[in-house]
Image (cartoon, rainbow, N blue to C red; front, side):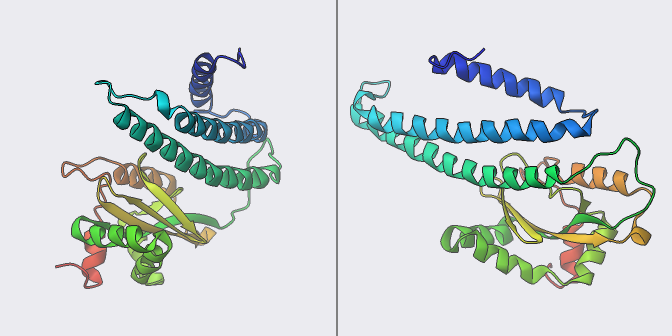
Length: 259
């Protein structure tokens, strides 16, 4: 139970509760329960935002007590301010997460769950890979993100989208996903039907687009293809990059973008 006064004990309690929730949500037996879960998560995210702001303020206001392991106050004070700044930036990102979670909860609230599956077929929306860059090609885009911001980089990557040609290439190579492929350390930026994923540490950047698949075009083994494609995208490879994207070279070569 929370103490409401012991921050260390309550942080441990929250961590254990989230571990339990992560385990409990591996399989959802009653879909109608998800809405209340989202409501509790939204409340938790709002509290997390407050916690981060308060921790940032505490690091900044107590920096006169901060020293490093060698007793250097200047160094300890600088680290306290650095921690405060990063905590503030984290809180800002939590704001974005709260906005997305709020939209998700609104959509979930419009769902009426039935006990029997539907019999009619309907169009489905899937993410298809537009472009995935590594190495020097990715460095150019990552520099653009640092210099001009993610929006400018996304507009640049949209130049790789050739409409039906891009869609056909993604379908042929199995680069179709229920969710945009992303590693744990990747940053994601959404713009309408596009999502850009990038990672400075591992040196890659990619762009996906939502595509509507009509019932007549759905393959019988589509779920298996999605699972395989997503697993391949998130597999670590020997060169240190987070993704393995075997179809990108073929797509680039077909567009005259590779050697």
